Image (cartoon, rainbow, N blue to C red; front, side):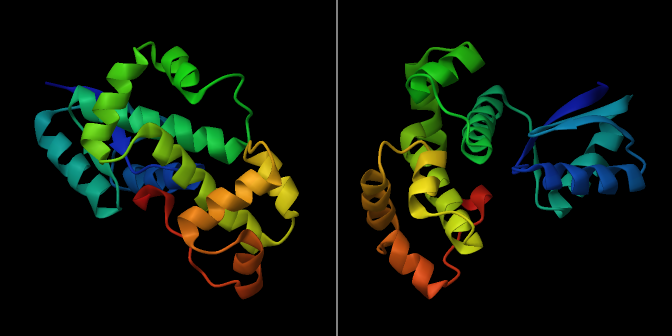
Length: 188
């Protein structure tokens, strides 16, 4: 069976895509298009080449997703990461956003995600927001209230409470110590 479109796990930013594109092109797998979590090659590859393709992808910290459930979980993760990283404001609950984007019942998405990841989608969303907050605090270019607004918190106090609950430190204390307590977003 020949294939040219692949779903990729752990591709969490545009830089990941650039790195993977370079590695694939160099190894003789010319890339037609690359998006977060997906790679389309210029031409289909056979089963023998798929093994080499998969090994190359794994060697660089990614993985090829073969089953439908894993693809759906990865799509949820990519949508949440994009939402947090772009600072886009939700026009309703996260559940409505995901339902609309994935054309699936939220209860089904929630059960699947929790079963595979061991945490709820909402918890994953909060953890992504906290990691983004840590990054923005370390940069030191925005006030805590600007960070809270960018991450769609209702107030700086709500942001501070959630940050302290998750990290054990207040945002201002985290800012003062500038200790690198960040977690890679693919490990959240």
